[in-house]
Image (tube, rainbow, N blue to C red; front, side):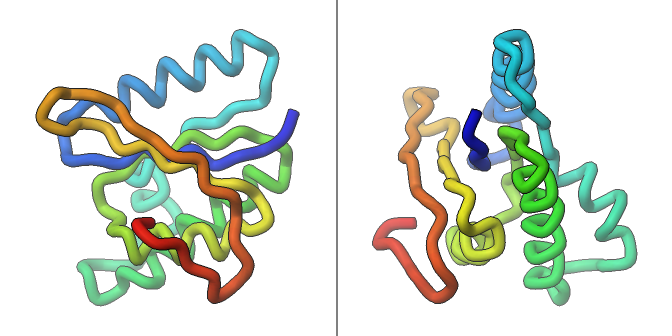
Length: 130
């Protein structure tokens, strides 16, 4: 199967973790290599030496590098975070290139899940609205 990074974003407590867990199980049960990468797990591990927003770019870079390693190993990576902003998503897309990124925002007023597939972009490329 092809690889992809699925970014589940939204405010805290909107169900991102539950959706990610269910998606990981569904993909795994279908015989696909899937891994759920939670921002908290990365922060407690490879980012444990960083503190505060002063290191935000480095936190984002390390997170994307871990995702890239999993993608490069052939996994579908499901990622949850309410820490990363839209600018951070651009950094993540750049660092996981050429793997595609699917951004799914969870939790508007109606509780709907919306998403848009976004292919990986070469360094410096941007996308309106992402």
